[in-house]
Length: 331
Image (cartoon, rainbow, N blue to C red; front, side, top):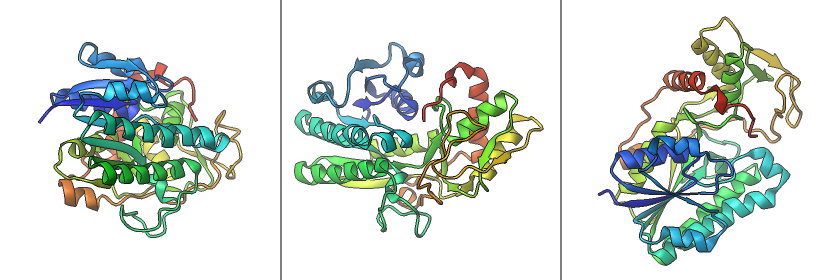
C-alpha cells in the first residue's frame, strides 16, 4: 500500500502531523511549502526522512514538477486567517481557490490518481440544523474564506468528474493540538494561563464550536489516502460535540492547575479587546459550528478517540515545553 505522497503546506500545523503519520506508515513523503506560515521546526524531527521543496502553490510549473511520480497529493496549503480574508478577499481567493485549481491541474498533468483537499467547516456558514452533514443543505458561508473553500470543493468535483481521479475534501472543524499556531481561542486561553493571567471570554461565551484533536483528523486523512473509494467526496473532520467558549475557558483553567477563573469582557462583533492585545471579535461570528461524524463512521469505520480534556491536556503540556512557539499572534 505505501507509496509516494506530495504534501502541500506540509510544514504547517496539520500538515506536519500528516507528514509524520505518513512517514510512520511507510510512505515516501515530499513537502511542498513556501514557509509563509509553516515552520521548518515542525519538520525537524523528520530530518533526513522527508524531501522538502520550497515553493508556492501559485507557481503552477513548480507545483506540477513536484507532483510528478507521486501516487497521491495531500493539499494542506491555505490562507487560514479570517481577519486576512476580511481585509483582502482577493488574496484569500487567490491562495485558496486559484492555488487549489493549480493543485488539481498538477495532479491531472502528473497523472496523480488521488488527491486529499483540505477544506473547512466554514463552508456551512451559520448552522441551521446542527450537527452539519456533508450532503445536506445549506452550504452558505458567512465569510469569504468559507466561500473560497466551498468554491475549491466544487472545482475538485469538476476535475474528478472530468479527468477521472479521486478527490476527497476534508472539512476540518476547530482542529487543535501540539504545533498549533498562536491566534485562535484555545491558544489564547492557554498562553494567558501560562503567563499567570485569566482567560478572557467575549460576551457570554455561548458560541458553540466542534473542537477536534489533530490526531483524529489525521486518521481520517489517511483513510482518504488508502480507501478504495472513488470520485469526489467530502468528509467532516469533527466530533459531533459542541462545546461553548465559556466551557472551554473553564476546562483550560482546570487543566492548567491554577486557581484562575475566566473573566468576561463585553466585546461586540467587529470590536477590539482591551484585555487581549491585538484581538478582535470577528464580525458575522458563527453561533454554532458542529459537524456530524456519521459519514466518516459509516464509510471508514472511524470515530474520534481523543476527548477534549485529554487533547487540551496534551496541548498544554506541549506549550509548557515550547513557550517560544507562541510569541506572535497570527490572526
